[in-house]
Structure formats: structure tokens, C-alpha cells
Length: 73
Image (cartoon, rainbow, N blue to C red; front, top):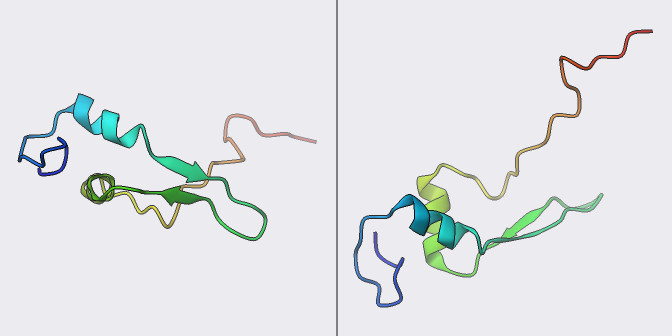
């Protein structure tokens, strides 16, 4: 994969290198009228998210109801 090093040489990505590049991703929190936005400033991060099968335009929603924690009346 090209772009992990500053000189753009092709290398095999390691877990450490992937986490290093993904650690600098920024997310703009969502509001009541707009969803959260992932801010990507380098192409290598976009390529890593594509390889991981992550759709940055559709963030995962957290489960608000846990099946083990139900309230009975």
C-alpha cells in the first residue's frame, strides 16, 4: 500500500501503522439537524477506511436499549 510513509513507498501495512494513521481522524459531532461527520485530510486514511469496509457517511448508531436491562412495570 502506498502513502503510509512520507516518501510514498509501497509497504505492507501492519496493525501498528494502520492504527497510527487512523488515530489522527477527527469527527465533528452531530447535532439535532446534522449527522456526525468524519474529517479526512489525507487520501491514505480514506483508503484505509475503504479497505476496512467502513462507510464514513453513515456512522453506526449506539444501541439505546440493552436486552439485559429492560424495565418491567
